[in-house]
Length: 159
Image 1 (spheres, rainbow, N blue to C red):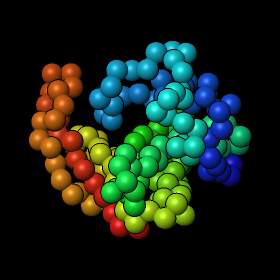
Image 2 (image 1 turned 90 degrees about the vertical axis):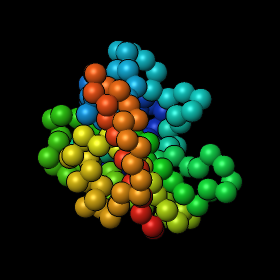
Image 3 (image 1 turned 30 degrees about the vertical axis):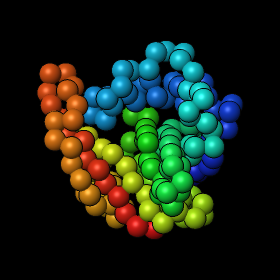
Image 4 (image 1 turned 180 degrees about the vertical axis):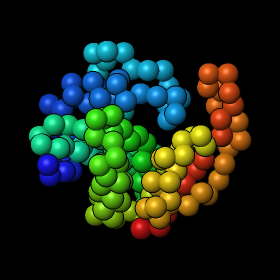
């Protein structure tokens, strides 16, 4: 099955919402689990910000690459979400999405790419480190998740 990465389309919204709901985990999420049928795109989350992964024409993952909020950081892009369906994990989908996001950031003229990851999310941290991201800061105990304090790890890399 060939893996394909492409820009998200507005028509992907129901499948993305389904994936987002079913891939949700405290391993990576600080927000509540999205409700079944909740809209995926909104005023702050546009299709243009997402890349999706498909295997055999089935949507199996997404990554959100957001531009900076202020002009002084216009040269920076931030990964603000990554999800892979449980059935597709272990097939390189996450790595392919990260690489596609890096390439997209480059083509948009970005010089840096950053992200935030929970300290207990070892698989994600290994993935990002393998793609050249380094820890650039840690916010100790930033989140209280299920009764445990979890650090917020800031990672980044030059493009």
